[in-house]
Amino acid sequence: MDIIQLENITKYYGDFKVLDNISLNIKKGEIISIIGPSGSGKSTLLRSLIQLEKINSGKLIVENTIIFDNNKKIDKKLKKDILLKMGMIFQNFNLFPHKTVLENVCEPLILVNKTDKKEARKTAIDLLKKVQMDGKENNYPDEISGGQKQRVAIARALALNPDIILFDEPTSALDPELVNEVLNVIKNLADGNITMLIVSHQMNFVKEISDRIIFMDKGKVLTIDTPKNIFSSENKRINDFFSIIKK
Ligand SMILES: Nc1ncnc2c1ncn2[C@@H]1O[C@H](COP(=O)(O)OP(=O)(O)OP(=O)(O)O)[C@@H](O)[C@H]1O
Ligand SMILES: [Mg+2]
Image: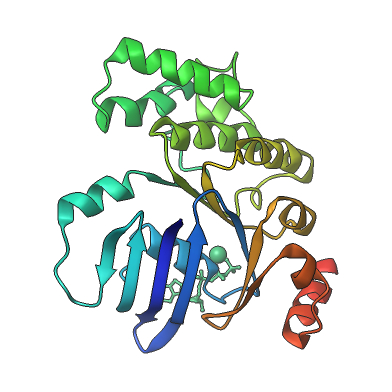
């Protein structure tokens, strides 16, 4: 089953076409990485999927629900419910600095799901174990490392039991020795059930984890293919990108 369907998605910033007629289908449980040069529209694509950015034209369907269809009216309640089934992880963690690790993970449960505090704490403690952050429940974000912050952000995204998680360069703000701990947590989430879209420059990780890789260039999907085919591609644009990444 296709969990995400994009048909001719186009987006402009002013006169600049940042997403250029993108069509693709993603199956439930697929792990998709998005790679490509800086400015090619990777972040904008993820942000548009979760509606942090306005799409100008095309059609976006998630879990059989129309999220955007040109200027047609859509069911706002259905759209809101589906958007809650999508989580996003950002480069800079976006934790609440004045809340503890535990409170950060409880927050969506209490505010969005209206879970009672005791139950929310229980769920949050379990989620923090899942990302190997038990023992740090009562620390504040500025008392933990970047890799730990990102793992808390992942636990917080998992709190609403998402069907889809979008990761936008989850490790690029981290010191090199902290990258793997976050990548390992992401790898452990891949259970065939949750669908993940991951923008990452960690090519070994991308190669290992992805079912398919999207290569973006100048707002277009240049190709979407298996890691094997992408990494042995003879396309000049793709090879130029790999040679820059390796430098
Ligand atoms: N809010 C904005 N207003 C105007 N232009 C923007 C805005 N956000 C992004 N852009 C432009 O849109 C293009 C795509 O940006 P985007 O952030 O999606 O690229 P990216 O592929 O994620 O790049 P990177 O690898 O550097 O993160 C860039 O040319 C960028 O300058
Ligand atoms: Mg980006």
